[in-house]
Image 1: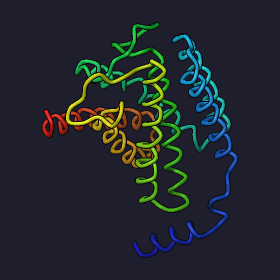
Image 2: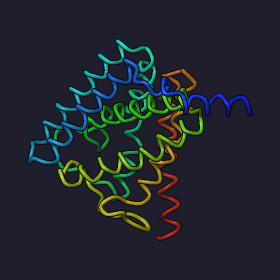
Image 3: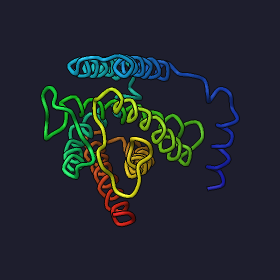
Image 4: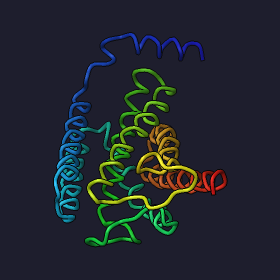
Length: 231
């Protein structure tokens, strides 16, 4: 255990460990495009079909990154599987009256058809982030880094989606943090803390199923807890 901690400390202090790899640059570029198109949707009154088109474009970019970068390929597959299976818990959130989607283009179990793609993207970004943090600073950083960043960045997406009319939250147990229910923020912190441990299994199909279960338990458990606390 002491040797592992010493090795992690050496990695953090080594400037070479923080140098961007080719895969890092591809993922950052991919994320940059994601932020740009999301900003366009939020800042301007765009038709809903454009949201579908943008998600398709981003997923196509992800395929290209995964084909060129073996280090992200299994994470991308894991995220894609989890994204498809996540629609079940999305339907649960809709059924509680908390999550509201506008009447829009094709839907799947009450969620927009692009939602599995959106989840595939987010899971891949944070899954790879955790993997790189593990290489640099060890498993504790790989666990906490995506959790904290996820609560902040996904919260940003939640706020943007509200103002763009992509989705919103009508009611929530216990407390709202602005336009986002507190239980959503907590659930996202829990699930992204667990993501590194699922990714490190290096079994993307099974990992995708497993992480979809983590998403479900996080949301349902957090909703139940906050309901008990605040009614």
